[in-house]
Image (cartoon, rainbow, N blue to C red):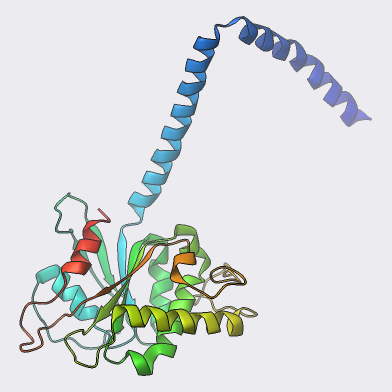
Length: 267
């Protein structure tokens, strides 16, 4: 009863004010009201845009991920220096500031995430809240025997709750195209879609999460009742072919134009 009395008291205080506002609005020129409404909508839209822009500006990391020996560290070096370097399997992340070639003044932080199975999820967990975009590097020449492991790692990334929330664009860089046995980007995409389609059935009951994550992953990859396709995902995913060393000379020019162009569009 006391609560009802309080509610009636509050209502009786507000009713005259609301009636006054209604009457005042009724007297206004409809044109003036339209302008006021447009201004309010504009201000709200501007506020939302600034909030989203601020959130995006705080996420400036470009993560290079993939299996061991796929070429992540060499890609890291090529993007930064343009030169070929002998690399070794990384056991800790490599980080450096990177400015795309369009020279718009936007700097990113390149993060070369170790590809070893015991390390990659640990470091991905560390950097995923700062991610602006991801480059998943695939060894096109060894893809046929690595397809299941590539798909499993990709599944863990694509079903992680934090990454789904941010929906960063992803480039799947089909590396080592200079090798004669390399699979094309189109074939790699098709085989990954088939493998992920199988994985979502076998793992949907207990989906994988990034190590240390407190938030659950989604239970459904893609659209329910349809064969999986990358186009069904909330993040934009592109497949491009590249080569980090010349077919005749390791120190030769790398075929990185597609990758650099993709990075330039993020600025």
